[in-house]
Length: 182
Image (cartoon, helix red, strand yellow):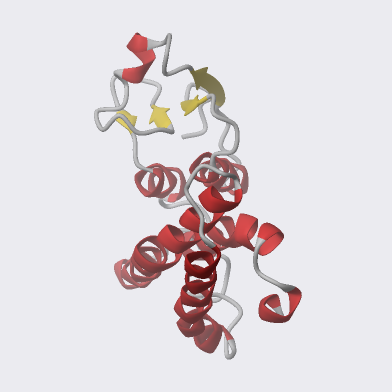
C-alpha cells in the first residue's frame, strides 16, 4: 500500500463526507494516492468503476481491483497498519462492532440533518428538531462508553474513532449546540 498508484475517484459534487473520511484514514496511515474527480454527466467510463454506482471508489495499482464502499476502502487502507484496524481478530471485531453501530444509527441521522441544512433534502422544523433529538439519543451509548475511556476500542486511535469523528464533524460544526457538544 505504500505505492502512489492508488486512485480515489470522487464525484465532483462538493462536500463528500465519505471522501473526507477516506482521506483522513489515508493521511493517518501515510498512504499516498491521487484524486480523480468524476462528472456523472460526462465520465461514463469512470462511472463504471463503481459496480454499485456509488462513490468514492478506490482503484488499486493493478487497475482491476476497485472498492466502492467507504468502510471497505478505509479497512483496506488501515489493515495491518499501526493497529489502526485492530492488532488481532478480537480487536478487529470490536472495531467492526463500533463501525456497524455508527453506520446504522449515527451516520443516517447525521447525513440527513446535513442534507436538510444544505437544502438537499426537504426540511420541516418539527421533523428537523426530532432528528436532532434522535441524534443526541443515538450518541448516548458513545458518551457512556467514552466516559471511562479515551477511545472506542483499545488504547489508541482506531478506525472506529476516525469514523465517528468524520461522521460528526459537520453536524458538530453546523447543527449541534455547544451545550450538547460538551
